[in-house]
Length: 114
Image (cartoon, rainbow, N blue to C red; front, side, top):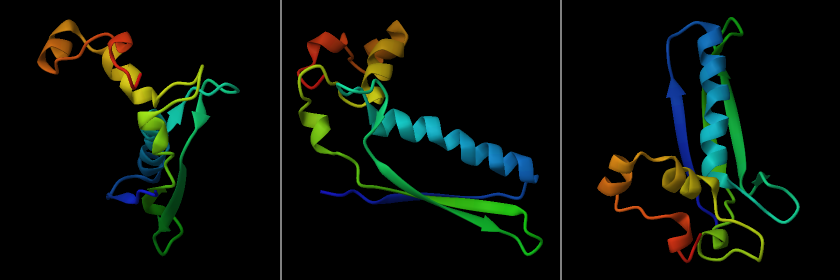
């Protein structure tokens, strides 16, 4: 199945600020859409389409990212020596003890899907 979601950014800033904001979306999307596979530790398992908007003078005025074609089956099943999406390990391994307690998180080894 395909999941469609989109988010758009409309801001009145300097050109550089918008370009930076657009570039900074990549690590976030990759955390949710990249995973370790047998061939690649950081394999992209999703597609995205980015629409860049320009003002009449040719400066970037905003952007809209449509994320689509996520490999959803990976959430519930991974082949041998492959992993689920990075975001789950980031959440479990990168949280403070207080955050882990508040979210009832355990070690990654405790989860069948990880």
